[in-house]
Image 1 (tube, helix red, strand yellow):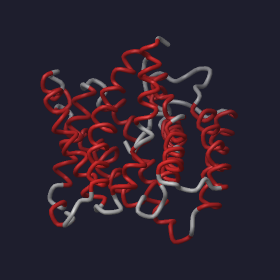
Image 2 (cartoon, rainbow, N blue to C red):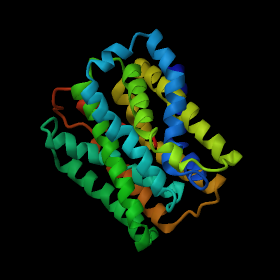
Image 3 (cartoon, rainbow, N blue to C red):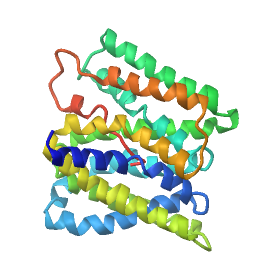
Length: 300
């Protein structure tokens, strides 16, 4: 990998580990739907001129039905669910639970017939989900299981999103897809946002929403496109293994969240399981889905 590739890789690894911290700060004073609405509105406003200049919108809108489905499972649903979950769970816990995305994606892609289970992959899936069980069993109170369920639904959406892009939006401009989905999500949130708008937005919450939009959405996707162009999609998605560590460190350092026994046991198991469970088989199936297996990321 070139120096530029390493720089892009490290930048994106950090950027997509940050959203959990910012969401946690924002939802203390702002309803999660308003947080998501602010993120999509600002992100769409910044990216739309770029997408129009690059002539990327038309190719995405040709597949508007699948673009809508992608928006629901990748943005509007997950960002709302994640915000509600982080009203009860720490940002560290949320970031570590989202790390199961590659494992869920591996199961889905295999069930679709684009890959197959072998012994190594089955062991990886078992280790990864054992890590989640350790994290939940050691750290999560029974009253917080609804929040865990919300994050698992978020992870499911994050796993399905790249598969939709691969199978149904593969010939569309990437920046057109991202911008189009942000515009659609903004429209979906808009009717509800005025009723949930807070009387006052504290500075830390406001800056967090702005950071989510400009850093974790606009900058993140622009860097991601550049990274894919530099190293290819398969190597670009290795950021998945670093994001949770960034989320964990930020939660502990910035918000003084506890480093728990569940995290100490569960985190390495989830990452090891993801590496084993998503590694390609010796004869990978045709199609780009395999390269997208580990793709996520953020509260992205």
